[in-house]
Length: 128
Length: 128
DNA sequence: TCATATAGGGATAAATTAGTCCCCTATTGC
DNA sequence: GCAATAGGGGACTAATTTATCCCTATATGA
Image (cartoon, rainbow over all chains, first blue to last red; front, side, top):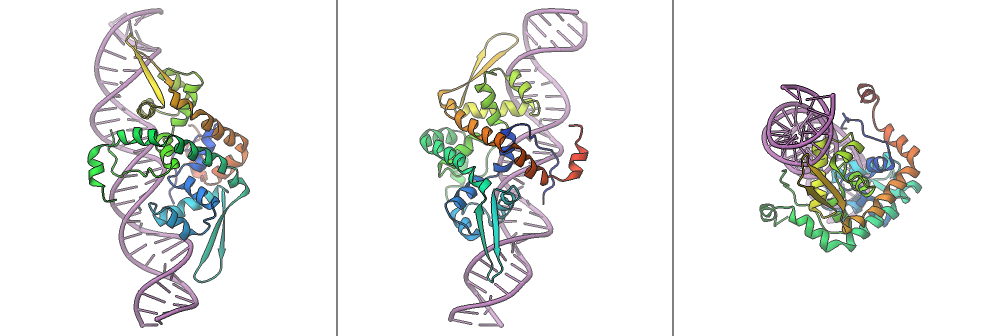
């Protein structure tokens, strides 16, 4: 596991929430778990752009931060289920609000974001 | 400037808002500008842990994404003022909600976060 | 004359995050 | 026996983000 070399700031609420929600897929993981997709394989199907590995790592962090809980059933083949903790449930309204804002301003956002991404890239990645 | 090699996903609202709000200091920049700290030097003083360089870069991105506007006064020494755009103002309630959640759960968050950060680090960085 | 304040940028290095590849477990079905 | 399934993890590499260092310009005050 990666050993941090720089201590994060934990001065204010924004620092604190940042520590637990930053991570490319964390918010989406929380959202999908909230929607009832409990098992790792389901989550991987919902987020195909993330590698299995990274999802596992981020799920582990969410678990360490007590936002989700994990139950491992001792069966073969293995069965694992994630769920939001009570604490984790309290972030859902925030995620919902973020997603809603993004949806409301979808066109404008897409526009300003794409302006920053140069053409060659689009060309090279048309197939992805 | 860094040229992206991977096209970001822009499928849903969460992807979109992520593109404009990710960045270690962006949310704080928006917040302080909202509080009336308009000038670069003021912002740097409010966020001493960020290097001047990075703040400039992130301010530029916020500007490109039309969340803030920048006015350069042609005087010497230079004077620059940032302000939230109308669009930028619409994110403030979200940031406020995030910060509030962080504040409400401050103790618990600090606790779970620090558990993940190992002791040697704390030792090596006691002075920072 | 020299330091200070103001704003900014290039080059480069360091830190962090994400992704790829390959391997392991044990059972069921063919 | 062999493939498929479900969940994981180590080693390593690539991508991305932040930080550091140094340099530019001009006016003011000591």
